[in-house]
Length: 320
Image (cartoon, rainbow, N blue to C red; front, side):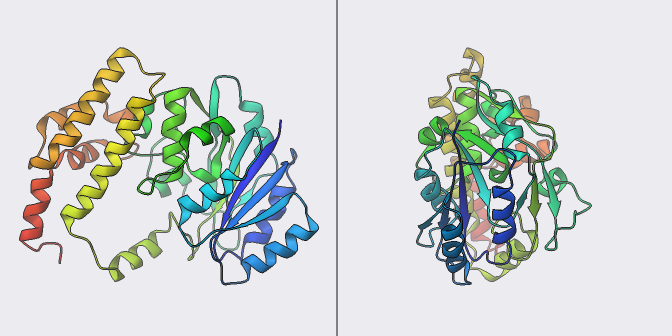
């Protein structure tokens, strides 16, 4: 079975060499490593060219500073393997990562993943767990699309997906991270498998593109903030996208699940015209343990707040 690795890079020169070494040191060696570089200016691109000359399984593609989703889309579109692993530029893979995930696959599995160990800039393990840092309570497996309609516990750097799943999921949407999108579609078609052993050392540092609380907080304080209603509309659009795709692709849904999902779609569309959607709140409470990975009742309340409420806040200028 051919294995492709889709590696997305952007100004990752400080850590990319160790990551590439961990990829080439796998006990089950990948067939190809497709690297999409998103306009790096720190020497990453030049290093990759030299590295690919020594290791012919490494192939370099150009991207045009379009962001994470487009960068990964550029990489996976060039992958030829039966299975595709998604790879961040600054992590380190355990030497048995590919073998562990491949051995877990069966005919009923479209996507497999495992937990991460968090490490700092020097590679030292952090005391906080990945679950606590990322804000979810447990990992999910099986074929329950409701696990991924509103939140996600599968990080892209831990997943291995069938090529058929990736082709079904392309193009990746702009307003939803590619890993949540893939997890949702996989769960509507077949099983998702979680392996218990840690397979990735996920590095947390000052330049992380995602999952960097300090950087995200600083960016949030500097940027021009959209209105509260505009942020509500963005989240509503994402929620509807995931709910409707889950309904459209729902091969694994039972009749009751399909009816419940239709109700959620209807109430999500309707809440824009309300201050608070009681019916949606009750619907969400019924399956809160499946729909949300963190503080479930609070999430139900937040999702039931309607557009009129945020319009009022904008008029009162509470967001300024």
